[in-house]
Image (cartoon, rainbow, N blue to C red):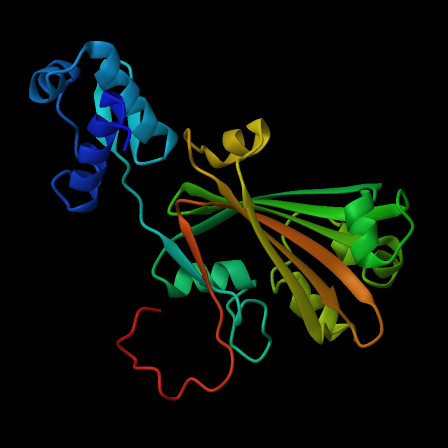
Length: 257
């Protein structure tokens, strides 16, 4: 069996110690000089090991401050209840879920009319390039960038529901607004994927090296046709999605949510 390169051995030891709480979230790692002595390794070997942990999203580096274990609190989103009108809401689904978790929501909006991208047009069953309204939200939890959400509505729907094209928030949430106008979404089709962020996504979500994004694409349907497509881009290190399917009476209340 081939022996691992020395820098990977350094990374493996530090990774285990981080996982075991020797270096908890927010803790600073020993200096490069201390690690050189500990592992009897060159500065480049130590730096390569540390760079590997940076690329994995376990630690961050700051010039002059050394290396620090990433510190974050994961937000758990129940995707089964999100936008479900049978559950009480205080405003839109995002504000409700974040507030109910004891966290602070904040979001900014951008609304524009633009030609529908091909992958969106396919989901909305409209001709690619025909006009659609994009409602784009940049969302935060406790002032930390959490996600971006891009929702596309076909032009025919905007003609029937003009507030969709107005700038700013729809206080009760777009799902309730549409339902009140007789356009209730009776079904959803979800697609979930993961990849590394684009430069723009990394900027908006303040993502460090090695951290992927999770993409949640939800197409909402009325009784006879699709009426919107939403692509939510989450920071992969700050989010967990849960679904509840079937009878969960046997599930203990003390189990992780």
